[in-house]
Image (cartoon, helix red, strand yellow):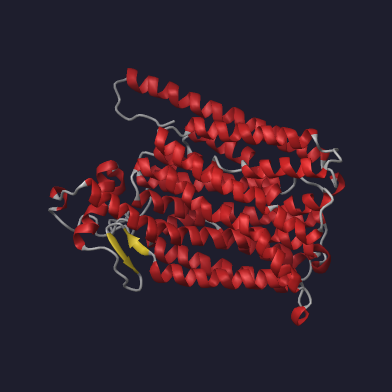
Length: 474
């Protein structure tokens, strides 16, 4: 293994007397607020444009996308699977690169890369072009989310992460809330310069992503130990830098590993960690329905009897509520110091909304069906960031934490592969079978969340009896 300095912790032991530095609680709170205003907005911005570029295909469907490109619904589902497959295949390699080169350069480069692909989607024609662009988009986006989550764990203490994970996912959910409204406006541009509305959607949102990538590379600081951007922007004094570094090390000494690589032992320990299995299953089963809703929610609202472009705006209501439930779940989890019960509660509420959607599948009451679809969207993923924080807290080293976050997002994108095939062309417009499958998946996710809670309680009892200090979080 290399002994070169890890760019994520670079210069963290540059000061020999750093261990003697003291600071007040007010100083630390002021620094945390500044991190919140520097690091978090840039990460949230990256997640915002990622979700715009990943999810705008659902809005494009309402503007005759499949007819214009020349594909069927089942071929569209395959393209969505390839997007998720591309992410899954390169998730861990991407995080290994992150660990070597640092977030400022790697995350910024990723944003620029998928922004270019997203823009070029506007000019696709035929099945081959559609499949290739979806796969390329997946390749370029792979690793961004776990990289963002891992970067947050480097800047914040353990009891600060759940709330920041929830803030990070605001980028995703805010994009979901805005995408329908943005699409409602842009899709009216059909015919301008001879382009379809969905082409303008890809072009405008792709250019926005490229601009975001440039901003990220220019401004994002390298690490708590060297909080300077690649372009030399300095944000903290030497004393403040020492406090930033020391406070996270006192909370979790594993964050001070001066290594540039994840060790093979850490990689093996994470990939063979049986405790992650319930988390993986509950993530795949719980998020598969979310990927369906992301792609088909506007089309479902149209099937309820609402107008084509209006449906894009209406689906944003559930996404706005999801923003609120997401922030609430993160704040409550940090306040209570309990992640597992909040994950279970979130999935249980999603289960209830899904049951209602299945029971109402043949109802003629359009408003009632729209209301319960909105509730299903509102609780579709608010538990997901808390589950990520839960997994992160139970990783024993920084290297294991990095790979654990990659495993989490690989599971989420595997959910996308599963979810892409739930709504089949022959099952429309009511999707009776599809809603039954969704209910079964969320039931499985709920059971696995209970299993995860129980396993950590039993393991802590065993740790206590063995006289070991490490305590699993739940």
